[in-house]
Length: 602
Image (cartoon, rainbow, N blue to C red):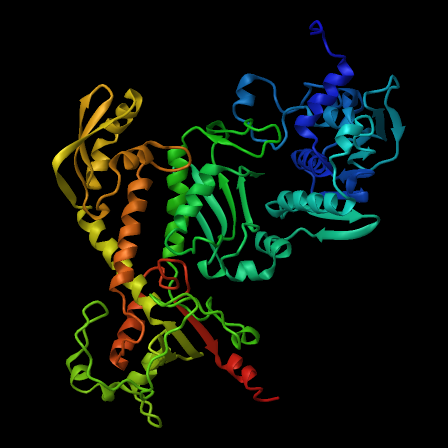
């Protein structure tokens, strides 16, 4: 082996640059973040060959004085950190003082800047390193331009790993989108090969989000602004009915910085757990603001990850805020669950309860309106005595519209008309036709009812005839004992039986024969989830299974009063738009959509 020796400074700089500069998009991110920190309200990005040949960022922010230009391109020089306290409470996007010198180390870079009140701008250039020349006079408005050319010209091995210009352009556009999403007060423009690819004026937050991800997201989402205990969450969460096949519309900002964080992702995923199909992904644009001293942004070289000093508190706040806003959604044909008539002709129907894969149960032929007497069905609602004696009396009267009929039509889900193939309820409201999946809707009603009953009295525990001794690490036992009171509320009671063991005396009644050791280990895992989530998730799975088995099945004939009772229960039930598995429970076809289906008025 060769002797240990110091690397040349030029090679050290090129290796360090790899922490920050992976591709043109990474350069764009660093430069635009510096522009935003400088207070720019206009930022222009110009690219050639996807940024491989040239990447130029011009801003209207506070410029750099002539005497500071050399420092700006030197390592470990920054205007944003003065002491250790500043490093522990970072409020800016960029702070390392490493971006510009790192980019310079692997490119031909020109820096031009002018501060307000200066007679002229000043320019400094270098290729891989700073030259010996002093800053030169230049023409430039107030602000800064960083012109980066021939990226990785001096490190050909790195350049081989870059993709085609089209691919690099896509990455650059994504990087700029993430930066511009939560900065609607700043004007952004992106040009490629002298052609404008993106132009965002100063606009409202909603307009900026709509411009970048589409009007459909804003119209199919819920705006929220929640704050508690020094934490504030703003933005939009997509309705469960607008779930996507990919996680391509998920933006999270922490103190203005776009991040990808496991704890945040876990909290959002849990908030959607009861309303989202396991193979679907929610859409959201969210901004979390908290004390900079309580979050470490220096976890990742590119500052895309963060670490919260009180992870459980942040997780609980995020979960609670999103969960509660989703639960406030009630059936409202004016807001969601509308069907595009162009796609209504070939609906995608999921497999129905208990049927063979791909098969769809078809009920035997029978009259359009179910006229048999209403059966006793306490799970939906108790029917009034007149409806029990004469179900026909509640049917629509054709020509005469009574006050009761009018009131029913004004309900969000309207008045029941008929049952289709023993599966769907057809109802009419003031807007048109409502189609309800009876099983999915009833399943949600039962599930929410079961959860409410348990929340009132806590979860009953089932005492074990033979208490079970679980061996764990000492620190794990200490953690469990600190949470003993909270876990007992959930039906799990135990005592310490040794330095590294606990004796479990009762388990949550609904959990059946679930592995107790596995459950305890799940409760001990604080990485990205609250310590009670494991038992709550297991409980919810059991409740969902009970609700699914108890809900009305296919081919069950429902009377009109029963169908109306279910519609009213849906209107009173939280999250009634989706079943426990994330499938929608109802859709609306308004009169205009029906007219278009039949080409009426054309």
